[in-house]
Image (cartoon, rainbow over all chains, first blue to last red; front, side, top):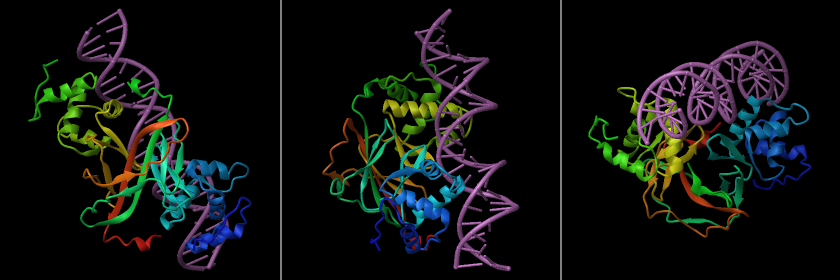
Length: 150
Length: 150
DNA sequence: ATTGGTGCAAAGGATTTGCAGTCTA
DNA sequence: TAGACTGCAAATCCTTTGCACCAAT
């Protein structure tokens, strides 16, 4: 199930196959969006997908981008990342990993695998089951004078 | 500055002292908001503060709530928590701890201290310094049928 | 008088929704 | 053809802003 290799000159059929594997009807727009997302591992907002997708010709509308990203996330193709109160990021790398978030630049980046083990996981609240553990390592630019907050 | 009336059982002077300690001018509205936040450790959204505060008589406007919560967070009295793409929560407990987030109910709760140690913290990206590490343990209701996502 | 704080309403930005037209199976 | 999908515009929700008024030094 993890055998799909998506390269830079992404052949369309692989995106289609990917969608089919996840029981998603591979419409033209969804395939285009998948091609962008899986061209390389990346963190994108809906707005970035929209502009990347439509940079040359219009390929999908705003509503379709939102619908599709939401669908992909619910189906497990991509992962929603909530670090910025103003927008949602989507990560095309769904493997188990965590993130740096630079609060000054808004830049989100992966923490290489093997780092940051969490030990001593606590019991879950009554009546709940685990979904996942997100770790956000918030950083800021070294030159920022954080002492002068007002 | 001591002419403020005491309307409930919370002694005003302690909130005032707290604000002064953090170099915040203790205006009437800020004291009211602080009293709500520090009545007990809790996680509240701006909207919840607004309605708790104004449930009987109007004590502060929406703009003031947002201004004040932002100010308190920048000054370090409270902590901003980003777990829900639709709104920001504020935690009146600033001690080092992490959170459960129930994605079904939107309920946010503390993980008791002593649990969930992170080991093997990775190096920081070039030119950045640590701000803090947030861990969100996402859970869902046990009875939720997560297989039936569509 | 000057600076800082507050409140109202309007503006802003991300996301969702209603609905008509279009495509897929 | 029925049901699913798309696109446009309008609507919604949270948050911020502009600006006039008020408070404190």
